[in-house]
Length: 343
Image (cartoon, rainbow, N blue to C red):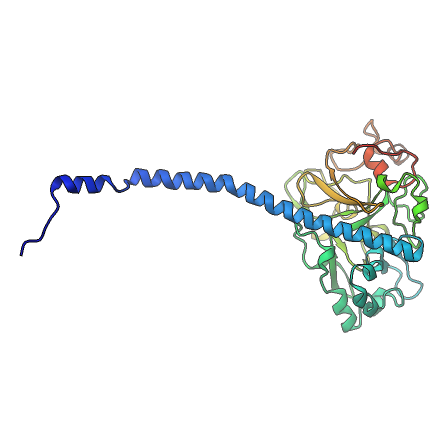
């Protein structure tokens, strides 16, 4: 029996119906281009979702702080120096409001405000609470570890936070400077009536990222923040930065010269005291009226190449730079007498 074989002409037609190697390579190249075009859009959509989640966290803080004010007739102190035990360890404002963000059980078990945070951390059960992650305190865009491995209580890590309160439009002033002062200071709660510039013109809580790259491309640690309180730092004022932030340092220090301000583990003192975020182009803030706004890196401000605030003539002298003459400073200071319009 003879096997039927297609004619030569038919075989040529069948071959012409398939893909040549060149055609296959062209199709692969087109698919690669389409994937390359689609990937940034997907990443952008993911970042938009993460930024919205972060914004919701800040809205929760705003609501919790307002509820705290309703109960206590003031916002909580930025940090409360204990009268017993090691005074370097202080409960912070971010612990104060846990009762109002569905963390009341954890707050009660932590013995917040009743015993020094350093003392209770020796109790394994309490330490476990201080190390339990709280999603509302984390920006989903940030890369910080769940427990903060920079500075510790009894050599143990504490829960990481990405949110810090406003302390001063310039440098540290735990006694609350009437002009430069922000909302969170030591041992004293700010009353709504003291925000004379208006709650819609005053920032209350902002972001801090875990790390950034300086002008030399080095990765430096900002340290984010601690959810429960302050721990010892290289200097007394530096440790306060794990609850609050300053306006004297540029928001987002990426690309700045940090020479001379690096400590062990490549930690940037300026980064550990300022505001920053992983969101491209700026950071998000909860204002004293509870609203949340994205503040751009390009906001009206005066900073040098080290990310340190200056006056309009690039002078770093504190007496000159501390004069409130930029939108950035006006938004942090609660009673400087200069109401901000658009920002």
